[in-house]
Length: 493
Image (cartoon, rainbow, N blue to C red; front, side, top):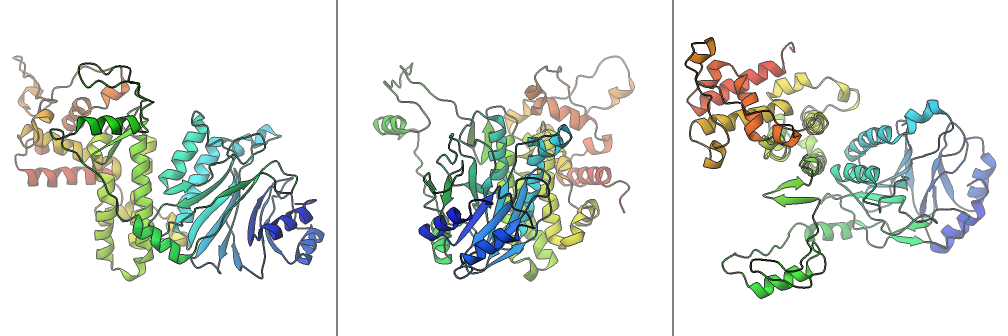
């Protein structure tokens, strides 16, 4: 911006752009001459300069056509960010501009700018911006080649913002050397889903910059309501296998986007020259299975649903009683977290922590823990609500399934996966315990050791005998929750 003020203002006037988000401004607070030049052209600027050399983000806008309020944001070490609330928009809109630098001159500063640090800080920022007033619209230079799905860092970044309920709208290259580096993110929520349509990437922008101009129209409220109503219903066609039309099935398979072009199709003993492309994940009964079976896709979908549901609940939170908040959290948050959670026995600590964050945010909503109270220890509030932490909820569900299997209350295919141990003829102290499960041989495969047949005996056998010998379902559930409750909140008043 230091030597491009005239070209930038002319570009904005020609295209009738009301507000422009700029990264790498290189402006400082002492550059009053540049600010005066911008004011002489009839524009205004809200600049957030970097402390050191280079960088900086800013909003350049026409005060006659748009009114904005700049909001201060806590400083992050791995990226620069600035926010403004557009008051003249029909939909209250929070516009955020972000710049992630990849240049470092000193090894001492490398830890502050590496990708791992950015992922951690950007995740915290998305969690904060979702809770703020106004529909968030995040744009900027992220320096990730999101078009390259083979890039591990790009995939992690995409999974990060999708897990928080955001979607990306730029599909054309934004850099002179190719690659989609400048992104535009909005929420998928039905109440805050902004109908972004015409995202234009213009190469001939009239300024000497290595990034292309990306611009679009900020939608109005009426358009948003129409989209949310149309997205409220989804039509699906279901075909019975016995009544399936083979020719229609053949045509649908030919036109499917999930397989490569098919030359020949034989529904007999062989499939001819069909080439099936494996999918990274598949959905069955609302549960997502990924190709590595680490449940990462399922956790991301759960996070997305819970963050959007919690954002909608906070809109009416001030009108709700404490009891009603607890009921809504049970139906909209905990029910999503607990769905099929018996399959989470082999989750990594990182994924368990993601689910725990969702529960913690729901508890903060119930007790209105905002501001400084947001950083209060969460366990006393969990204990007050009698909410088991996520890792104990998983163990509770697995132990409950084992009890049902031993008492013929579970399906046959589950009962066949576990069995009681064989009692030896030699008299030992443990021979009096007839409720221990047989532990299978340890497996070298991590995914096998996380299966129900391996993880269930580990969880069941460490339970006290008084719990394992229960014969009534209600008594067992009461004793089991008391046991895990005491274990989770020991030492907490």
